[in-house]
Length: 349
Image (cartoon, rainbow, N blue to C red; front, side, top):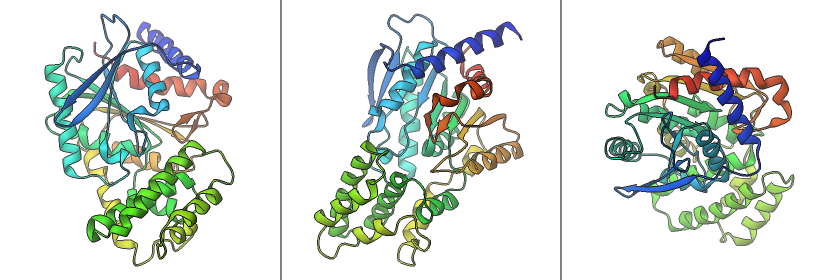
């Protein structure tokens, strides 16, 4: 093993140990804002040298960049010498489909920071869970950012948006993920129809999603959500029936299909990731209850087709995008190798 690999392995182990700790590392935090976009920047106190800046993306999540799991991840990266930029992504906080403006504005923001901010040395690497694969891929293919992106790490991503979204909506998958996609469907319908009652249903669904996020492990969560919707929704609202039918074959009716196709098409990224110059690390949960690991296998094959360097790991250490440490001894070597691959390409030499 080379000296470089020894140091990489040491840092990968340190990274995992920090993730296992209950407390988050004490960090210096700065706030950046440009053209109505905002991001938090984290570094070690009085940090003189940095291995590089990793942009940590959140997925479809109403907590956004305040999600404690994201902050835990940031703390572990900062502990091994990276600085982290965590942008707030309005489309993902609002649980709506993205527009080209969302990508262009965030690309301009990152480009602006890379030029004007002394804490960032002009280069980025990207890391994010789940649906953040869309933003990472599209941003890394943007002409003004493409030469500045060194490496991507995708954690339990989807590949075919249409197939993945259909599977979530029409099979017994994560109820939380089903509610999130339902909100995206209703938002798509609202943008086309501007129906005021739809706006009320969207607001009510947002409350149900927050409740579900905070109580994911409760076995009776769907029953509780249905009771809440039944009590609070207006007479004639289809929301209760829609939630009751989630996870069942035939959920995507002729009425829903146009909005389903809309959110699926807006979530496609395979053409964009084929244009990037960065290396890609893919780590996927073996027993993923949201996106099947086949997504990552297909993604890796897609990258191989375009001769994009990539590393793929399917592991028991993840529960979708959350680490589970009960399999750490059996899975340690493989996860360390994957982290070594990402960190080796992410660091600025």
